[in-house]
Image 1: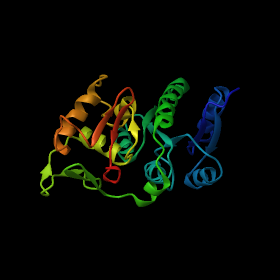
Image 2: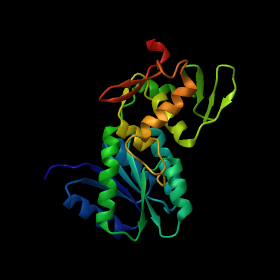
Image 3: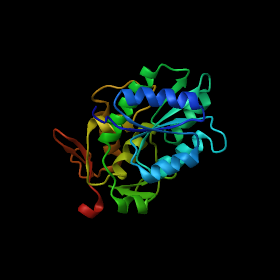
Image 4: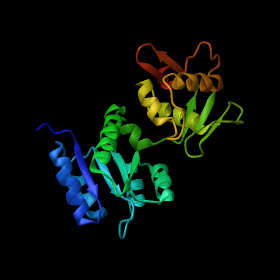
Length: 241
């Protein structure tokens, strides 16, 4: 059977780990299953992984701590496994970098659907160059403005703070971390919307138009966020001008 992806399960419940392993191996995935953070690190050091299924309530290092560590060092999809009623865990999980979550108890078919969705998004992500990953600049010059990634703020040329919605910041951050690369509308839609927001095909275009009015010298003739017809948008960094 064709390998559909490489899955790492991190959960201290042996029976649950084996149930997930058997189901996903039957569905064509390569599956690794460990009980804690130490096991997770050993697998990641030896094998490339596409998706991590992470239990929140692990003994020792909890799932939220491990998710934060994963997001800082590995480009993998992360699906949290949370207990019913633990809304705070689900919210915090998404905030620290999880792509999605599944509530226990669950039907294996639900996890499969979530994993397929996250895997599709992971494979569409532009690969970041190693140099960019090492530098991690906090202040990004974008047209007439400066984006502060750490403070989630946008400043004009005089240092004044410009109002940004959370989704507008996410959009600018996606461009800032992928300079001089074409980002598709589908990718931008994934990284720049909230789970409870109404989403429609042209919403990305509307957001781009809004942020252009803030960062472009002339939003009608954009030189910073350029449209690449039939492909998406590209942030033209100062090094390319």
